[in-house]
Amino acid sequence: MTTPTYRIAAIAGDGIGREVLPEGLRVLEAAAKRFGFTLEVRHIEWASCDYYQAHGQMMPDDWKAQLEGFDAIYFGAVGWPATVPDHVSLWGSLLKFRREFDQYVNLRPVRLFEGVPCPLAGRKPGDIDYLVVRENTEGEYTALGGVMYEGTEREIVIQESVFSRHGADRVLKFAFEAARARQRKHLTVATKSNGIAISMPWWDGRADAVGRDYPDVTVDKQHIDILSARFVLQPTRFDVVVASNLFGDILSDLGPATAGTIGLAPSANLNPERKFPSLFEPVHGSAPDIYGKNIANPVAMIWSGALMLDFLTQGQGAGRAAHDAIVKAIERVLVEGPRTPDLGGKASTTELGQAIAALVAA
Ligand code: GGG
Image: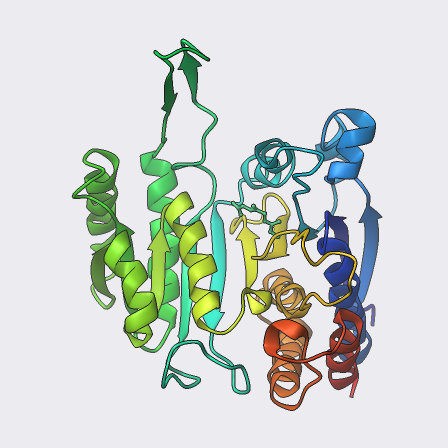
């Protein structure tokens, strides 16, 4: 019998992406060996600020062709503001992947693990366990607008947001399906319809329209300001949260911070129709302040790898078993150690990766 083979494009990118990606791959290799599948990994050096410095752009012109035939992209982090402005590096790499591969869902689980000190007083594992579904291809993330009278007292800047019925409905549908699949069947819709008086009332209306097909899902619309406060004060209220591109980005940093550290937070940039490769990356960025010290927490990268296996195998068989084994190994290491400094320990990125890989291999 032939074993399934998955072709993965591994892109470390910048900063700590280069330190956590090898640990993610180490764990994936251990899982492949134990659960009987093959990973064909190609390392890609572009989509980095070093590449930009050498070539004047983040990626080669034929980047899309070079990624043809890959099942998924396993991505570290982007950004090195000392050499390339952040909006140039982001628009030149990650946002191109999301848009041109139509990865319109950005799935970001948030969970408080046993053994992780929680900054919210009195919270225990189980109190923070929700999914943020971020719209990933439009909304507030646009390069539409411009500057008039630049450099003068009369300077004016305009930045447009774009919401389409197609774009909103498909991510809302995904979020309703995700809520339906969970025990509580509860969906929070992030909005700001009192202040953003055109697009947000419209977004709420699309949630009502899509929600008509999901009478079994309880819907709760919350303004983004109070929603953020409740992430801190009442995290047990949340099950699945759906948000526009910018609101989802902010919520999916805030949520993991309330659960101890953003170093644990994974994400899956999904093209659910599987027409294009999906991309799996930690929520955290390149963290230039700690790069080079080998102290970054690799768990977000490793957990993103588990999400990748689950998606590639449609949650079936060996892929699901490998996903579960990786999550179990993460849970155990977070209780028993070793711990990186963000978790109060002294262990290195490598030591944490090795410990998780050893548990997955066992
Ligand atoms: N691994 C994620 C990463 O590199 N993030 C950089 C960043 O600034 N991302 C913004 C975004 O996700 O929209």
